[in-house]
Length: 59
Image 1 (spheres, rainbow, N blue to C red):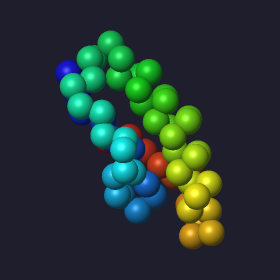
Image 2 (image 1 turned 180 degrees about the horizontal axis):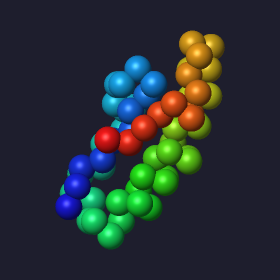
Image 3 (image 1 turned 45 degrees about the vertical axis):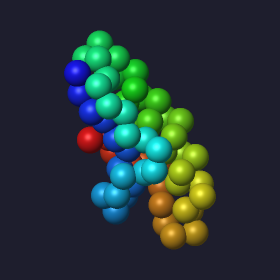
Image 4 (image 1 turned 180 degrees about the vertical axis):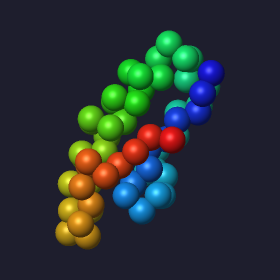
């Protein structure tokens, strides 16, 4: 089991993205969801400040 969270380009956790106790079999699925669905939506709201979904990461 792992804990995952989406980090913005500045290294801060994106609110509402902390996933606790993710089974090892689902880590890739959760990572893909955070990077491909959540990050672009968050970056869109912060685009005026230079945020780009390609610069987000999962930790």
